[in-house]
Image 1: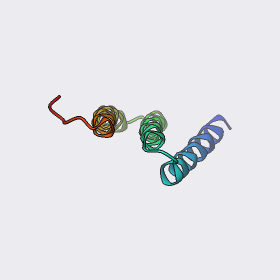
Image 2: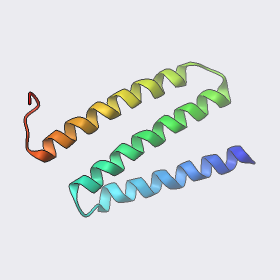
Image 3: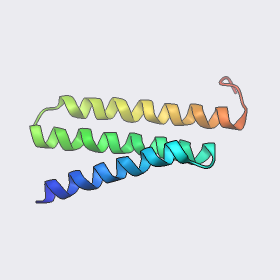
Image 4: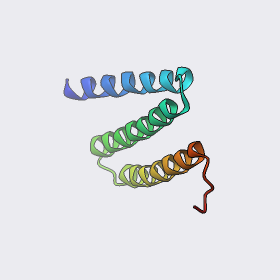
Length: 86
């Protein structure tokens, strides 16, 4: 029962994030939604790792979180109008 509820909550959260990415009124709102979507993907990977008992999904989650962080920093610098070397 707990697994079903967890899966449904993650799916609903993912749909809400996708809605915010598509209809976000400002670019910072979309940036936050993309960041939260990355966190949800890490949650899905952790859930799959626990459910299947394989370490592979945790490696994906760790890599995804690193790329998500770097992508968020890059997008924030772009929205500020600064170059990547500043």
